[in-house]
Figure (spheres, rainbow, N blue to C red):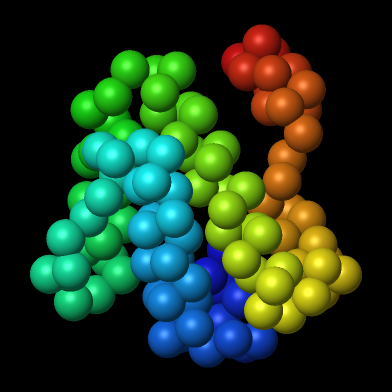
Length: 105
């Protein structure tokens, strides 16, 4: 996703948007709250992955979905809904497509 957004809002823009998304989402999922000590996005993503992996599947899926929705909404306020939809369309794979692929495997 960062590869698609960096040309539009820059590396720092993507990082700040992601940090804001985590902050907003952690109000609903307090276990997602991450300390300010992360200097780079790789460490932040590694911490997020570890936190999601440590939760029950249902909790992790709900939090991940909320993160993506929140990120999308915040991005839309920044660059507009139309551009957001065009940039993130590949990220939003319909659940039926994913389920179909999983059952074929």
